[in-house]
Structure formats: structure tokens, C-alpha cells
Length: 210
Image (tube, rainbow, N blue to C red; front, side):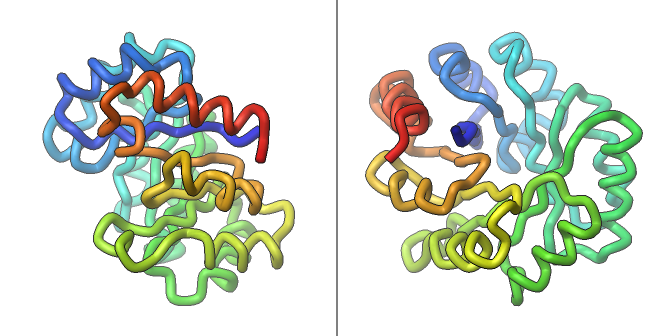
């Protein structure tokens, strides 16, 4: 079953309120980039009581100083950190080294990677723990993760993939067809009138399949 990752991009107070309602329904809690901009990595400490058994992911989107910046997330108690797939290999190696030394993991974001299949093969050879097929917020009106998901899954049947970018209950079946390990959902939960009901519906879909 794919794991459900909740992306929290709002204020810290809103994130705590939502997580209090839905924490038991998600597997990974993402401290989103906007939330980190507002609150800093200390948001990890503030959210941990609301997600005592879930993994915490810091969406730092690292582009440089990979080892140094990854350590910032890991030392704050995060289990995962994100680094950009377009970053230099040396930067990615640094983040992976920090993960090895701390027993943590690195998710590599493929947003804006020009040749995702070629890059994915290279990143997996480097030891990437997870490759995230991500359609950014500014492109969701025109694109989705499905094209790249299909490309990678057909060529790399066992690759650890995550899918992110405007995913909601109505589009979840199409995403699950490509067997991602992680499905990242943000506003479909955080912007719902009843976040717990929205998270529960997504969870049930993940558990019972297509």
C-alpha cells in the first residue's frame, strides 16, 4: 500500500490544528517549504507532538551545501529531507552521506529535470531513497505527475517513486495505477471543509486499492 504524505504549507497554528485532526491517518508529515520559510526548521519540534509515530519530512529543496543543510533537518528531528534532482551530483552525495551517518533518508525532487528517466537511473545508482515526481504549484493548471510517472514506472518497475502535485480523491486512481510508494497530498486535505473526512477517504482508497 502506498504511504500517504501530508504536505503542510500554511501557518504553524493551522498546521497544528490540521495535524491534530488527521495525524493518525497519514504516514509522513511534510513540513512544507512555505512553512519552513515562516517558522524555520524549529517547526519540526512544534509539530512532533501531533505526529508522534509518523515520519517527519523537511521539504528544504536543497540545491547546495547538501551535507550541511541535510544535517540541519536531521538534527531537528526530521526523518527525511528533500533535495532537488537538478542539484549537482556532489550536493546530492553530501545529503546522502548525512543520511547514512544519521540513519535518515533523502527524497529527490524531479521537478524541472530535463530528462527524468536518465536522471532517475543515475540518482538510483547513487543511492537515492525516493524519487519524487512533482508537478509544481505554478504548473498544476497545465500538467500533472502522470506522464513522468508512467515513463519511470514502465522503464524502472521497482524504482521507489513518490507522486506530488495537485493530487486529490478524484485523481488518486490514476496515480495509483503506477504504484508509487508515497502519495503526497496537500490542499485536498488542508483546504477541505473537513480535513479529517478528506484524509479518511484518501486513506481508504489507498488501503483498498483501485
